[in-house]
Image 1: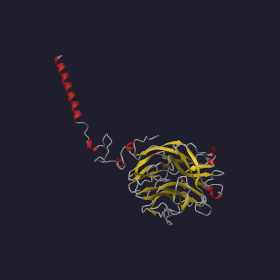
Image 2: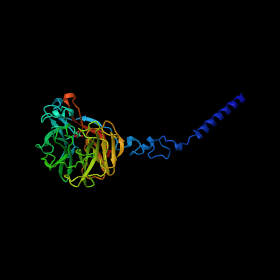
Image 3: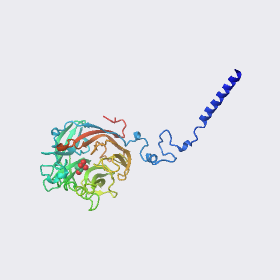
Image 4: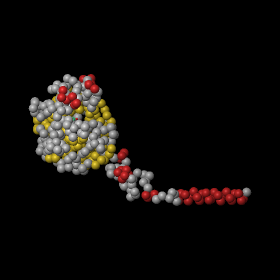
Length: 396
Ligand code: AAL
């Protein structure tokens, strides 16, 4: 029995020693050369795969910590009449809402036609009563709200001028600037039905002392077209003004291979035009186009620079990007279910901030709300967490 006990104790001691020695000298790998278990905040000095390299190109390696990342929630607005969705009334391309004297104001493209649009491919059949596309035969309307959900339509802000003045066919896609106590509406001015050569259109401006108007015509073709052969020849769309570095920065969209001449190879870029005065003259940034992805323009002051939401077109569609100088944008995050024609409520859009705080909500549109012969668009609200003020709840 003694011998057996000794043998047993001996074996036990050996096995304990082996276990212990396993703990002391684990696998024969150099841990310092392996990607750590805890996600690093800085690039580790080890060989990295292309994907691991790229994760340090973002503001934070973990997307959850990235201030320029958000999800988006949508809410149907109350107060807008759509003729039971028969396609004869459409509202789209909202401006960024502004808050004046206890109320939010928004301007948007409104179509109220006898029939829904017949389609860009039948644009030749459009008349002065029959619209080709959803943004043909439109005027700029405005609405107010106390909570950003229930809106009261107030009426027309800027209507189509008499033929042959710029915009006689349609005025659409407005955005707002507040500058030295005055309000400026920037919008697209169409002289032909969209789908023919209508979309080769410039930007006009109207201004007012109050968001309730009346609006005075301030100028046409304010963002100069590019020369023949240049990317923004004959088209400047989606003007979106901001105040930055004491100047007016207007981001705008143009398309390569222009519609209707070249519908198949159509692609979108964004440019930046800068002026000292809202009515111009505007000087284009030497590096235009400053963005090669996205569709409608959504730019906002973020910290010391400018951030943008790029949706729909281009290799970098569905990303949020940032540029310290407002011109050299880099991807900050990749996002999904993004708001179309997003127009956020940006409290510091016109304050010339050096510390842009972002936003938690805005308006956007949904196109093709009614299918087939009921085609129209609706404006909706989106909520998100792109605000640097963490006390703000993400979803109100
Ligand atoms: C929009 C915008 C511009 C285009 C058309 C109406 O969403 O990009 O405004 O011209 O579509």
